[in-house]
Image 1: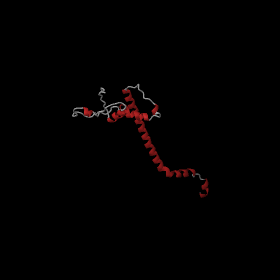
Image 2: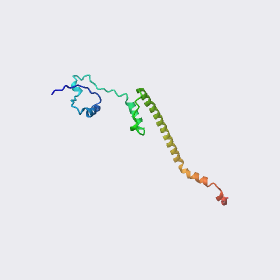
Image 3: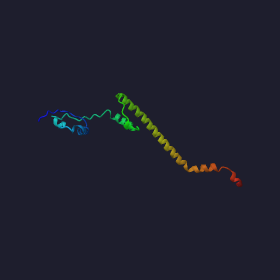
Image 4: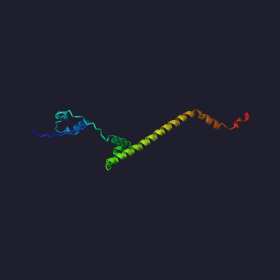
Length: 143
């Protein structure tokens, strides 16, 4: 029996194509062929290497979502537009960086105070000794 086949093009990263093929296309009778075998000339062929313009924003959004207590239970707000989402991520990142800088400053200040405390630690017993033994009641016989 002869069955008419359809020719479709699938493009994308090789790992994604392999994953989609395994998940969705493997249950059908399908014949996969490399695009290079179908092309007559590959002289002008070059890979598409444009980076994803949303990669950095997505990474930051996933990072901030990971800081939430119940991140798995929260669903994203789809009412925001693309520009609104970028603005939200930008302002959240600025606030996060300010908090991190303040945290680092406080950490350095804590270390400085701990070092100063270690410097005066040997003299603490003397302060306590001098403060408690300044009375002259026991020294009357030495005058």
